[in-house]
Structure formats: structure tokens, C-alpha cells
Image (cartoon, rainbow, N blue to C red):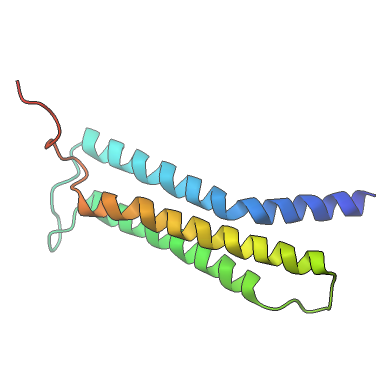
Length: 125
């Protein structure tokens, strides 16, 4: 019985892993923006890129690479012929990785297009 529980936990973790990567990306990017704006790191350093922009690009690239890697790993056909449930689980994992990949890109695009510490939306008094 413990072997069955271990397989369940491993399968559940694999199904949730893409969403954990997405959540970590979301949290780290917004915390990096908040910290950079608090200590005034939004000014250009090299070729117009700021520290915060570089951090956002690196975090996003790492999350995208991790999700593409998981998707590629889970898209491979299984080594041994299994039951139909194994194929369904692989499809769910692949779908979760694809969904999380779209979510990471979706949440990164506005951050990259809008200056991170913009005061454009604050009312002037």
C-alpha cells in the first residue's frame, strides 16, 4: 500500500509542479519590482537596460525554460506500455505545463511593456 501512495504523491506533485513554477515566477517578479522601486533601481545601466528589467527577463526566462523542459520531458512517449490512465496522466501533465507556460508569458508581457516604477497612474496633487 505505501508504494501506491508514493506513486499518487509523485503523480500529484508532477501535476502541480507547473503551477508552482508559475506561482513562484509571479511572486518573485512582483517582489523584485516592489524592491527595485523602493530602492530606486529602475534607471538604465547598460544599453538602456535597468537592473529590474534584467531581473524580470532572467526570472521569466528561467520559468519559461523550466516549463518547456517539463513539457518536453512529459511529451515523450512512455518507455513501457501502460494502462490508459498513464496516458491520461501524461496528457494532464503536459496540459498543465502548457497552461502554466501561457500564464507566465501572459503575466510577463505587461510587466515588460510598462515601465516598472511608472508614476503615470498616480494622481498629482
